[in-house]
Length: 579
Ligand SMILES: Cc1cc2nc3c(=O)[nH]c(=O)nc-3n(C[C@H](O)[C@H](O)[C@H](O)COP(=O)(O)OP(=O)(O)OC[C@H]3O[C@@H](n4cnc5c(N)ncnc54)[C@H](O)[C@@H]3O)c2cc1C
Image (cartoon, rainbow, N blue to C red; front, side):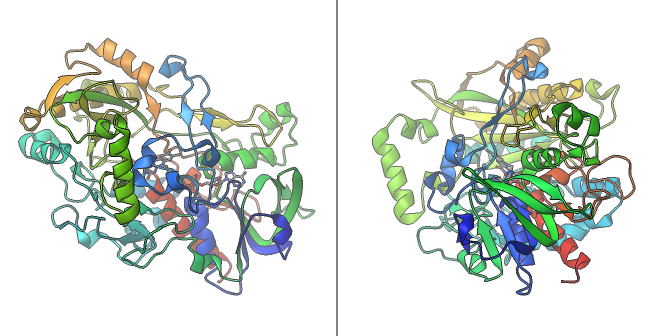
């Protein structure tokens, strides 16, 4: 059942309490409650995603999530971004950030996961051993326009009977042909049939969590017209009608509480003005995400003991890595004036056309609103002999893993100029060496934490993004674009390195793929927050299962990895309790 009010809960004890109903939390609750003898409660701070249009129409993902579904964080002033504080949205809604994200579904490279396995000493996190979980997560479907997708993906590497729908773009956009043509012209930008095969390098068609033209999230299933495939999601009505699964919305966990035995099996949460406690007889599982999870741990007295004492929080378990090791990507976008119509600007400037596009989506799930911000993306490397690497080791997970990403968009990103049609190419640095933190500046558990991405603390990150923009210039100069691109709007390719670096510092924004704040490390290590089986180090009763456990951010948008962590995490719990 899904409850709005704690008064409806028929019990005060559950086998498992899952804090947060986002990507990983929804998976864990679904898988654990497959066993009808096990009771599971999700406490989710936000409300339901059911019927919330902005969380359903893929194209609306281009806008910042609405305030009602967003934790609305901003970072601390970032020295590397010329002192700017930048937005850090997180989903405050069932499905978590999967209900508000950009829908792109990218697994990362084989080497990303093999590094995860290597640095934690647990082969279970390697690419090969995660493949069954990738398949359990994925239900590859046809795009909404039913076009022939041969040559746009490799069916051999996908799951077709998992839970989340993953598909290819469902509406052709004017840049498509130019991007694909450019991959045949320039050696640097080779076509990759399927970037989710483990070999990610190259440019290819994007895959996204869309089902018949609507968002496929970890939350409840919200398709409003009859879907063509089996409608599934981790918290669809079939799952939430299990008598042993309870989902309480608007329930914000403030602390995990220690019992007389020193175990952490109870949670304190607030709903409206009321504070309540509930107990898990087996485990509390924190799935509150890379910002929420360290916040709850720190308020519970689990973290750096001296920092907690200074704030007036009684330290109960000294674990200095909590909230540290925060890693994220950084991106900038460039735009060009193009010789085309059919770009986003047409509908932005014409309310009648926008209404027609919405009506088309609403009645048929077809048309331009069925896709989000890009139809093609690329994963690329700065050449190994580049002078930027003279004093550094390669920060990527391996030689077949990207340093940066390119995304091609069919319009101006942000408010468009009054006239003209545009194409944008976003460059993102995806192998950060900088490490930031999520810390507290108040003992009030309802106060927002301090999110310090520490962007460009390592200069190499800035240099990689600079080289990524240089690569964007080369891509935009491919013959394939010559009859399409008219002139640069943002920057000219002749810009000096110094001016380009300044542009990046002035305009860079966060990738919103933050990880690492409850990082896993080998069992017995003096650093890290969780063991490779995701139990909080040297504690009983408490586990973390979400994106925060990743020691490195993969060269990927992170929802896929959060789902895999949820799937494997659920199996680790089942194993531990013989379920
Ligand atoms: C705007 C945006 C765009 C993005 N675009 C993409 C993209 O295109 N592709 C991609 O792969 N990834 C994208 N991401 C990232 C991706 O969505 C996340 O990496 C992924 O959802 C993380 O999963 P998670 O389970 O760790 O956390 P989340 O999915 O964020 O779930 C955490 C849940 O915990 C809840 N919670 C937090 N604190 C508490 C508390 N104290 N009590 C109770 N509940 C709590 C939250 O409300 C939320 O529901 C984007 C993220 C954002 C915000």
